[in-house]
Amino acid sequence: MTSTVVQRLRAGTGTPFSLEFMPPRDAAGESRLWRTVRAFEAIDPAFVSITYGAGGSTRDATARVVGEIAERTALLPVAHLTAVAHSVAELCAMVDGHARRGVRNLLVLRGDPPGDPLGPWTKHPDGIEYAEQLVRLVAARGDFHIGVAAFPEGHHAAPDLARDTATLVAKLRAGADYAITQMFFDPDCYLRLRDRLTAVDPEQAAKPIIPGIMPILSLASLRRMAQLCDATLPPAMVADLERAAGSGPEEDRDAVRAAGVDIATRLCEKLIAEGVPALHFCTLNRSRATREILANLGLR
Image (cartoon, rainbow, N blue to C red; front, side, top):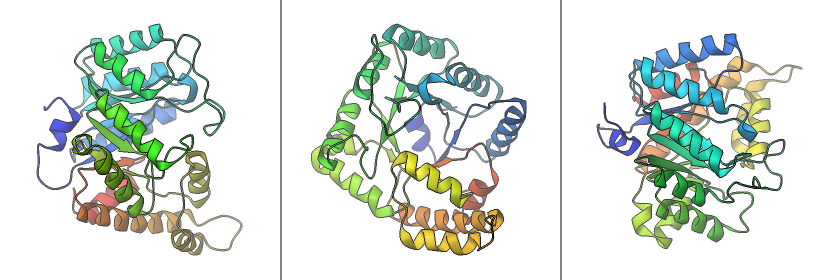
């Protein structure tokens, strides 16, 4: 198997896709995760990433799941690594632990403050302040393939889009090989990000900037996630989802999911037409909606 994310993206024809999983919280979640992993293994994603809980809450679970996917499947796993609540010594130990498991692909993030993702950031007293520094730390520990986050609408802590773009450029220059974006629902947000990056540093803009796609399973959940991520929900999209949800006391989850599949399919079609290097789906450890979107796109 090809060993790095970028090599996998460039290995085939058509538009590659990748998937994001979360570490399970209990035995039922463990079973659901592995059913989802096996369902997707058969259709050959470019890679799969494993998220990292707020404040380091799933540090051990993330490492375990990544290691098991590397050992038990044919998938290429990418481990999330964040600076939240960790000293430099702890970060080095985690990076070295991934290397011992044979995991060399890491998605390096500063991370969100625990409790309030939009709250003020305070680094660990013996930790690091910026994602760029974490990229350099990982790169210095050995032969790692590094991804970072990008924000189509700008990070909430950035004073403006120019500063946000400069931050992304700094992470890429520090040694990152690609970036994955936060979820968004207007393709122009991604395209404007790509244009800003090209204007500032064409060399770094040549690296893959992979759009993050969130299949919509529930209108209520979508609104909560958008608030936590400070992401904009287009009014026309919300209106479509509200019609699907119905007027009863409980939203029609099946209708919302079906509408969400259509919305994500249209978004992906526009992005593919614009030549994106891949599509990255946040699965929430479920396979049905993402598999339907992939089927609609002809990527299965």
